[in-house]
Amino acid sequence: MLRVVKGAPDDHELAALTAVIAGLAAAVPVEDTPVRRSEWANPARRVRRPLQHGPGAWRASGFPG
Image (cartoon, rainbow, N blue to C red):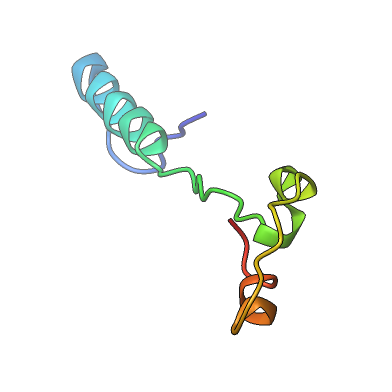
């Protein structure tokens, strides 16, 4: 709701003011940041890869994907 406290605007000026305020209210950006999930919580990790053998196998067992 708008209230004029000083002056006497006509109908066209009030319509312009209302349009500007409505446009500014609609232009406020909504923060839509994607939720970042930990790779450790990824359901695909439940499917186990074949184990690797040999040097460095311990390192390969801790990396996802």
